[in-house]
Length: 253
Image (cartoon, rainbow, N blue to C red):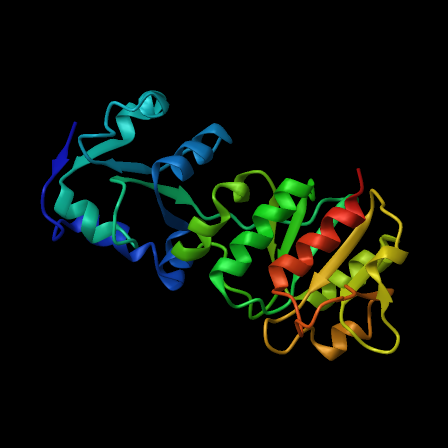
C-alpha cells in the first residue's frame, strides 16, 4: 500500500482541488470526507476512484472490497485535505454524476429555488429522504450539491434520493405535462393552508430563497401556493423547518 506523508504530493494537490466546483466539473469527480459518508457511498453501490485514509482507517471493514484503491496518508495530509477543524482521516474520490428526472415522471419531488445556505440545503435533502420523497431538484442559485458543507449536511441522504441540478422552469413544465400537482410555498391572498391539501403519492413542492422567498415567476406557474398558519408571534419559519412540516403532511402516513 502506498503511503503519502506530504501535502505537497501531486496526488494530494489534485484531490484537494476536487473540493472546488470548477475542478470537480472538469474532472467529473469530487472529494468526499468522513467515515460515515464514505461508508454510505460504498454501501449505495458507488465505486471510488481513490480512497485516502490515515492509519486508523486503512483496515476499516467497509473498505476491504476496495483495498487496491486505498492510499495511507499522514495526519498532516489529512488536515490539508479536510474542510473541517477536526478531520476524521478518511476521504474518497467519487464520480460526480449528473442525475436525470425519472421517465415517465412519477412520485414525489422537492424543488429548491435559490436556497443558498449549505446547512439548509443539506437539511432539506435529509428531510426529503426521511419523508420518503424520491427526487430533489437543485434550481439555479441553490448551493452546489457537491460542495463540502452541503455534503456534510446531507449526511449520506444524497445516496438515498435522486438529486437533479437544473433550471426549475423546464422542470415545472414537465411536471405539468405529467399531471403532477405542483405546490409553491408563499403567504399571499391566494395561498391556502397546507392543511387543506390531501396527502398524495404524486406531487411536487417548491421552497424558495431564505430571504426573498420563491421567484414570482415560479409562483405564477404553480397549481396552488401553500402557507403554514403561525399561531405565535414569530414572523416566519426557517425554510428547512417549513418544508419539513409541509413534506410530511403531503406524503401522509
